[in-house]
Amino acid sequence: MSRFSKGFLPLAGGLMMSLGIMWLASQPQIATGSVYAGGDLAQVATPTSTLQPTSQTTPMPTPLPTMPPPQIAGCDIFPGDNIWNMRVDTLPLDPNSAAYVATIGDGNLHPDFGAGLWDGGPIGIPYITVAGNQSKVAVAFDYATESDPGPYPVPTNAPIEGGADGDGDRHIIMLDQDTCLLYELFYAYPQADGSWTAGSGAIFDLGSHTLRPDTWTSADAAGLPILPGLVRYDEVASGTIRHAIRFTAPQTRRDYVWPARHYASSLTEERFPPMGQRFRLRADFDTGEFSPTVQVILRAMQTYGLILADKWLGLVYFGRARRTVGQ
Image (cartoon, rainbow, N blue to C red; front, side, top):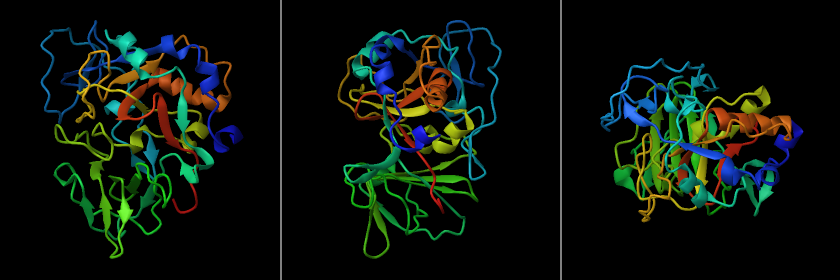
């Protein structure tokens, strides 16, 4: 696994000429039940969603099989039939797929994780597992009306995206391994009195399908959790990634589709993808020329796809390369 643990994955060059025509977008509709592939309509369930079912009538199809959900520190990362953990390789193509793909980027995949430093800071989005008795601290939010008030179990050694001196998104992600609650902060800074400030924050029950309130952000622009969409070293080492992968695009629409809850754009043209849009790598894309570690990621992109979760550079997907002692 040395190529994976020593820097960026060598994806961009191999996909540069083909990604522009090799991506498909799938946009699920809302209904009740589980994830189905029935006729020309892909129906996706959410028991807690406030959105209304599609008005189109379709026969009751056969549910797609589910796999055991991914786990971290003994916690299921959402139930096995959660949308993050559902296959999309058989879902129908979105009518706007070609337009979406054209606006996303130059055809290069940019992995934002790996060993070493970039501009003086660590690469990727780290997370830390904490015990249920971890002391919780107060957090003051810039977007308090769309943030869960907390308190949050931020340990003194909490890893910050970009490092302690970084000035990027500064995400902090904490997983309580005893309660299986996920705590995520955006643009977090420690204060002298032991409290923290942050742009926004969200708490997710990983045993539930519960979404953010409609129109609310989270620690991510789309109002989605971050941790379930990260590529993790242990997954690649195991040979299988069983969930969708979080990615960003430079231009998005002033809209969002389930399970996203929030938009981050003033653009209204239909050619731009909304937050929450699901994409996948075509099944006939030849992954054989890539290393075994890269093939694990490409297979996940073909099977589980990617979810548009934030607005940044085109086709950037995120992960954490290797867990360190105590994390």
